[in-house]
Image (cartoon, rainbow, N blue to C red; front, side, top):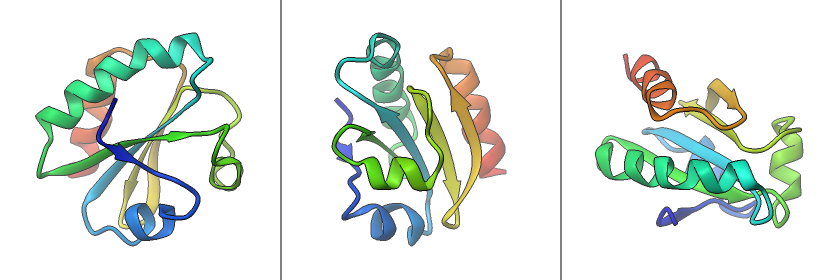
Length: 107
């Protein structure tokens, strides 16, 4: 698991008010494709440590935030820059797709 966990309670502070780039993996424990994405998210969290905050949000436990950002399918990985979503990747993707979205947002 990624060490960073986002919730409805901490989302505003930890994601929207964060000056760093933030990547949020919207997932659920019962979701097969989400389980495939988890090791990729963990690798990216290590690779971008100190540069990008990367964490997970369980949509079953945090329906308010998922609803606010129209997360209809999971996994959905969203990249936030200055509190605004700048990329949204729906469905299981390869590591390079996530890296590309992060690199573009960092530019």
